[in-house]
Image (cartoon, rainbow, N blue to C red; front, side, top):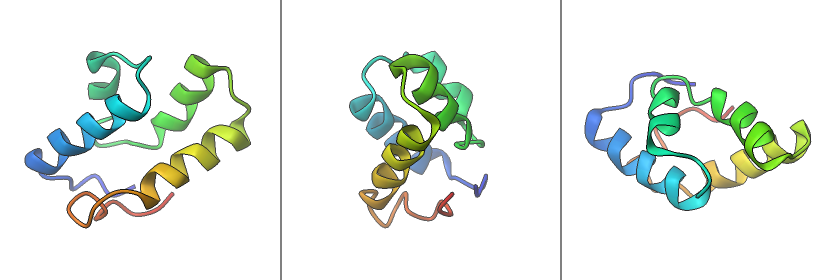
Length: 75
């Protein structure tokens, strides 16, 4: 993952993550800042998904991001 996410992009991305995965708290999402690969594990743990399912859901989420936040490399 690209850790060079600008603060403005991070705020937008954080809002999208919270909207997509409503069981995450804002503090939990803040922990991902700079290392979004952690989100797959968090999806697994929080939602009880298998690793493959969590990875697929995250990849689908990445594909929906606008150009502003899509500067993050695909995982």
